[in-house]
Image (cartoon, rainbow, N blue to C red):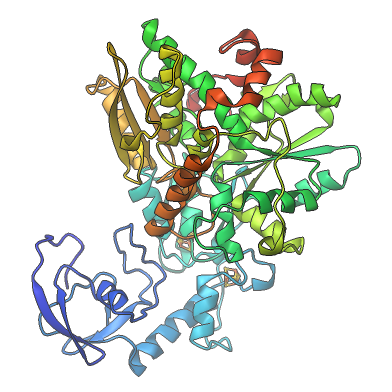
Amino acid sequence: MATSTKLLISKPVNIWMNDEPMKVEDTQTILQVARNHGIHIPTLCYLDEITPTGSCRICVVEVEGFPRPVPSCSTFVKEGMKIHTNSPKIQAIRKVIVELLVANHEMDCLYCERNGECELQDLAKIYNIRDHRFLGSKRQNPLDQTSMALVRDPNKCILCQRCVKVCDEVQSVHAIDVTKRGFESIVTSAFGKTIHESSCVLCGQCVRVCPTGALKERDVSTEVREAIDDPNTIVTVQVAPSISVTIGEEFGFPIGTDVSGKLVTALKRMGFDAVFDTVFGADLTILEEANELIKRITENKTLPLISTCSPGWIKFMEHEYADLIPYMSTCKSPMSMQGAIIKSYWAKNQQIMPKRIFQVAIMPCMAKKFEADRSELVNDGLPNTDAVLTTRELIRAIKKFGLDLKSLPDSKYDDPLGESTGAGKIFGASGGVMEAALRTAYWLVNKKNLEHLEITQVRGIEGIKRAKIQLTPELTVNCVAASGLKNARIICDEIRAGNPNNYHFIEIMACPGGCINGGGQPRGMDLEVIKQRAQALYKLDEQYTIRLSHENTAVQRLYANFLKTLGSNEAHHLLHTHYYPRSERRH
Ligand code: SF4
Ligand code: SF4
Ligand code: SF4
């Protein structure tokens, strides 16, 4: 049997799959060949992005001459192989595998968040599981509800290890593993720590790939509903830049369709008092961050400047690279900046007591729930954000409210915190913060705008994108945008090794590809989908009348009437913060 370490020098081979002759490359697995030829083989543990474990065995196939069925995900094709993917014997084996999983599963589908979109449920349906053939004791492990963001239910875990592999191979956090043996096996953090006590950064990438309801976000939609129903509370909501091009997928729109207008209508119908665009907060972040970058360069201060918009990345840095904290930008994320402005500037303009405001954020990210709970993100005794709903929670809430996004008319975001630019919109893709900040940094030093606004070197879904951007004849800024924590680790190690690439500016996003692939987005890990979502954001940028954060007229008025100047004391009070090593913190 071949392994995944096989050298990738390919040779054509002749095989037969379900009696059909095929000429294929011997670097392909049986599963890959089947998929390329439209033959469906079920999988549970397999994901394109990670090393196959072959642990679930649901993808077994028969190969003539082999003593027993083999896992198709980790077996490479060989000359002359005769493969049967769906023989009666294979169907019987798969049925028993599913029956055994079901026998040791807490079957409370009616109460389960994954009811109707669960891969185990789908298989039980396909293999016509109608009774409990295997009766016996079931695992009874406690739910881990210790985290602000993530809930783990070990009794719904089928030990496929997708989460473990994603955490190791994609994120390099190594926060979880399978421990104990046989019936006692369980996925847990090192030394049996709870999620809250562990080094988990709450990125949610494991949740996106879990086939069952064993991993999920902490759902706060009931708390939000209660706030909306309270007549004494003003409930505002802001929507992150990437959401408008991802949420439509769950309502039958083609991938990448921008549904901003319909989303605003849905949120208003659900009872939110004001609906704002987080792109406004992104524009604000850009002005403060570009100003910070130019100051650090021109005043010979600490470089590189590392962006701090991604809460999973911040937590990772606090756990593992606390010595790099001085490089971090002091700018809060767009969500927290916008929350601080809603409870100060907007509240003052509307003559509302800030403590009456309940500020909700719709985010692509599970770690934003953790960000909202941070003590550093509080102003004048009030948290910048009161509740965070992920895209998935909002999808469920919209459906529960009986709204069909497709048939809703368009509405506009509320002013003045609804005015936005193309620069802020591209925050949703990896490299977007950097591109937007460089557009404004150029203007800050040259007092004119870049001729070509597209900084294509930092676009695309590659994990690490390096660029040299000439701001003036004397100043070339060395930049790198990394996404996925495995890539963040590479860049952090470079900085520790003395910054050999002489970076001035670093953007890091915890999730591969950025927020369009955030841990709170619709489930799945299809790279094509991520690419199309990113392209949709760049297309929207081109369609905006204003494509530069410093030209956002509502942001300009905010400075003129309230914050005064970039980096002012007022701006520092509301828009900036500092981070601390995790070892010095309570949580
Ligand atoms: S994880 Fe799937 S099979 Fe298990 S209870 Fe939830 S919906 Fe049912
Ligand atoms: S928690 Fe989910 S992804 Fe992880 S092993 Fe269990 S079922 Fe698989
Ligand atoms: S949330 Fe992220 S860091 Fe935590 S276990 Fe999942 S993949 Fe690992």
